[in-house]
Image (cartoon, rainbow, N blue to C red; front, top):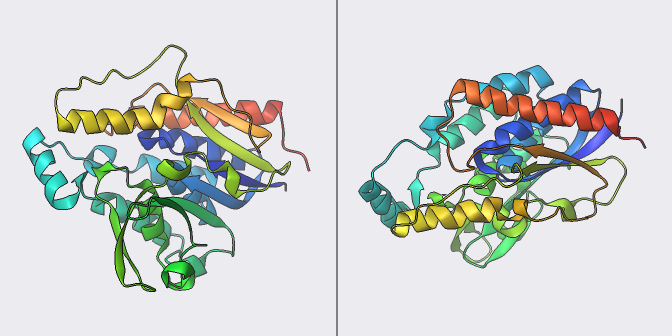
Length: 288
């Protein structure tokens, strides 16, 4: 069996398609020896690292009630949440999904994973720096073997303004830090892996000439537009050449921040990612 290192980029709710791509990779007979991800890609990476087989990845992803992650709120409620929580929504529902999914595979802390099997990117808002978890945890005075994987993934996936930042105490200084979406530091964290023939990158693309229109009328809609554009703007530019030779590009026409996804639409996005990876990896198999 050929082992691969997977690099999964961020992309909001469109990360469902990344999960489909991971499932297809497994069905083609590959095995992930390491998964690196940011934001939605961190979630998929954690499932891969925890040992989920293809059919169970589909089951766990499609069983989530995605609209409940960001329940409908009025503009006033969002403003109040921003003031008191520093985000429109609590990350608690997503944290619960992560904890249940990982615990089902016996994964609580990083000690429950093979060494080096998972790395996720988060952003330290206090110091404006990207952090690699679990690698950078000792520098904050935390033992990776005792640190919850679900907490690290939530940090990476906490889109600014949308989700409240995740606090963590720097035990070396006593400072309370706020962690948020790793996409601000590295949306596609290809630089975290060496250039190798068995590295596969999974990226999201928008259809040609497609974009989400943001009707900006106030601070809430402006914040949504800023974050939404930060996620998708680069997809209108030509793909960059980088340190990864094997790239699976997945085209998904959906607003990254629109979590109002029906089970049928979630299944469609998953299948889109599955077919993209199946077709592209079959045409260009990974060889070592």
